[in-house]
Image 1 (cartoon, rainbow over the protein chains, first blue to last red):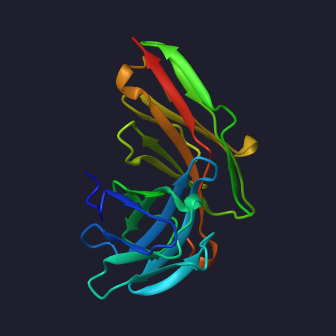
Image 2: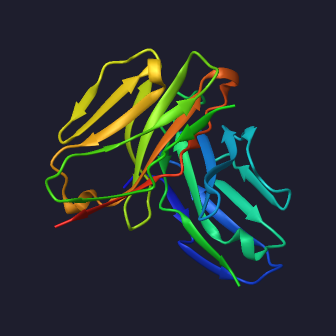
Length: 114
Length: 116
């Protein structure tokens, strides 16, 4: 158990819908990352937050947004869903900002868009 | 831009065989960090090791060992006396120090199957 929690574990929805994925980092970790794992793209970085502020963006679609709240939990919002958004979405956390800190991953949320 | 290449896609071995998973990386930074993660069939990503660019010492942890060679930009992972429980997808990843952007760039992963 990494200490990072993600809910829900599975999510099935329809095209055009909007969903919210939730992540609670390990106790004491200030940095939260979101990654998407799909068969064709592999594991890709989406976005990073540190202590409530957005710090880096990767290959995140404009239909996707995220935020980190004062209690440090984070939410990833996916809207106008398409079939291609079906993937495993991971949240990771680390204690600091720099690359020296290892990232611990949550169990993931498997999103299926029908 | 940073890049991680795991040329092997699938490896199948018989239990107790040794197996080496290759990882080659590209970066322009002088300070960077390399990682290996394991993704078992249950799906979670499990952290295995972190190595910084200034430490080329090999590391051994039980049946696992890692060989970091800056000259060839490689960070290979060897499992000695493999076991069925080692069956998983293994990812190599790179993080750069510059710009306080510590995102991980992953390779495509290597699927390891260990047969009894």
